Length: 331
Image 1 (cartoon, helix red, strand yellow):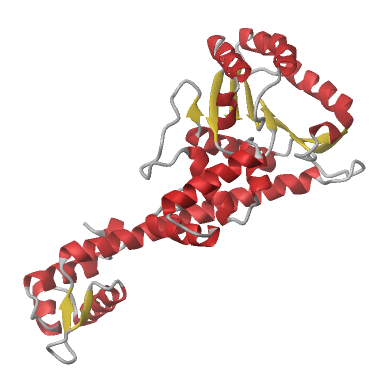
Image 2 (image 1 turned 180 degrees about the horizontal axis):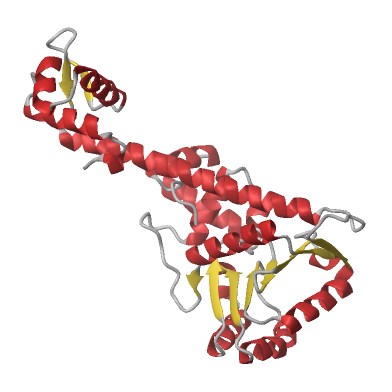
């Protein structure tokens, strides 16, 4: 069955009949397929739109069926384009979720919006986090978009992490791939894993985030200045969306113990992320920030990609990447 490639049952039946009887007209196709004339004509229109039949050069007004090897390539290319479009819609939904997070984060401190608590300043944030972790019962999920972890931050967090894990709290943390270049970060992640914590990495993260027991989420007011304050979200709808965002990211993240794998095009997750960010119009500085690397590293990765694509400009690189299917799947 070719329905998985976007071909209706009737169109597939007519296509197979035409392959066996290339000179058959509508009446003959009706006899062969057992469908009514209207169904056969609709199927022929569908096959024409899919470029599986074309006008005959020898018979004016007649049509010729495209051979299966070419026809299947056409269908698969079309399906791949549809999947790429679907992935773009998914990314648009993810961006909408991130925008929603941003809108909540920009609420004024005096806001009485249900399910939103504004924390102003680092002291309030720390106090609220202490309360949250003290009351944790089941699970802690976190996005940590740091390029590396400082030794002081690691030392400060270890007693609490150890306490939570010893209490049986499930801890899952997603870091940036760039922490793999930081020895203290790797050692800390391995320490967490040794106690039962789970650690994965991705090329880019939308924001810093902490979700406690799937009931409370904490995100910074500003991703540029996490000490400025945060918002605590407890609304059921928002928590459902944030948990879904975490799970989707976790599913595509790579366990820290694994080597940095490449996709079928030979791209690392970081290279693929750079391609998509550049295609979305991000600058080198913005790309560097999202990936937790230096602008120089971001420029180097972009330059390497342009060289592989044999492109003289970033616009041309984007066009060539689309043609090669490099932009069909987001990291």
